[in-house]
Length: 258
Image 1 (cartoon, rainbow, N blue to C red):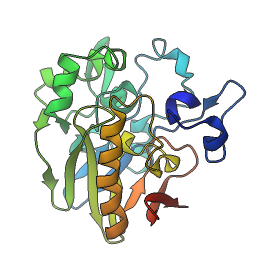
Image 2 (cartoon, helix red, strand yellow; image 1 turned 120 degrees about the horizontal axis):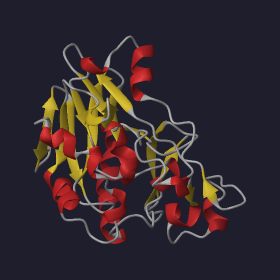
Image 3 (cartoon, helix red, strand yellow; image 1 turned 90 degrees about the horizontal axis):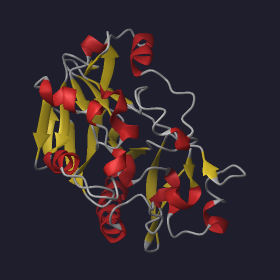
């Protein structure tokens, strides 16, 4: 759960309540929707949720019904050892908490055979956090991965596998990674907190959690213009109701095709 004012920034409640629900305390239900991309030789996780290590610290978000990524992999017949890559869009706790786990009192990488991909800009933000997002970083979510030699930092847009590209977008935080996955059904994208819900497809609907609203706006224009032109499908990390959609340009703005 997150406060509606924080999720939708300058957008008044009388506008956003028509697109997104909240309870009597103005709290909006949010998902932490991870994704799995599978090819002949790669099994790539896209973000890994909050995990279960720091729930008391973030109790004001009322975390509930948290689903274990390893348990869901087991449903698909996979083990944590089968994961070849983990893409961390950024290091805010609700996206990377499941990257590590506690084993016999020690915090270790949750996916021991995986390469963990992160932008160098985001790693630097973790090492030298600004005051606005310092409380969103937890060392035990990422430091054990670095210590194990499993962290791979990228500085530019890059393909980490055939048909799987990572691109950098700023605004919400420095160096957020957006995944572009080529499939038989077209290109699927995982924009993370660049477009956290389908309601945020509207350009001016920018979260108060974003470090720089104007940068977020320009980055959304860059991303959504291409997504609409090329017919990409967006997977929404935080949308509790809508898992994915394409987008359409509407005059000088965009809307989700739900």
